[in-house]
Amino acid sequence: AMSISIEIPVVSGAWLIPTIESVLAQTSKAWRLHLLWDGGDDLSKRILQKLEKHPRARVFYTERMGIASARQYLSERSEGDWILPLDHDDLLHKECVARFLAFAKERPWAGIVRARRAFVDDQGVVHQAPDWFPFERRHYHRGMTRDLFNHAQPMIIRRSAFAQTPGWDGFPEYFGAGEDCDMF
Image (cartoon, rainbow, N blue to C red; front, side, top):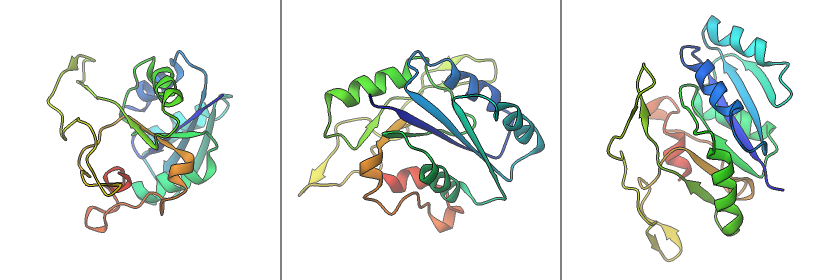
């Protein structure tokens, strides 16, 4: 059976508990949670120390590496068939893993599967906002994608497709951020 490695670099604890709770609430159990404390705040470190004993979680600690390097660190140490990169302030719908895996099973050729996102405010109210990037069919030219901005989170990346890339590599002018855009 296919599985997903949910990977979260952590620098702030402000939204970390709801993020972790959204992972633990998944209806599918075909996942494992990998978190890296990337030289973050004390709150995030204390939260991760409590999570270390959870049977579905693996927690790592490093000094500040930056987002792209932190994602690379996690992806090199996880084992799922698919990688689901998550930020420490994101929430997953309770059926996210199940829906992703069902979609991926029907499309064994897919390398990246993406979903629509919504925004949640400080009170937990979901706000429908326009897509930051167009959410439409991919555009190709001679087999290569030509619409690098046509992506969304959450997304999953097939590990075998990820292995054909140089890995997570952000943009130096953004201190390593933009690693998700770079992956697309």
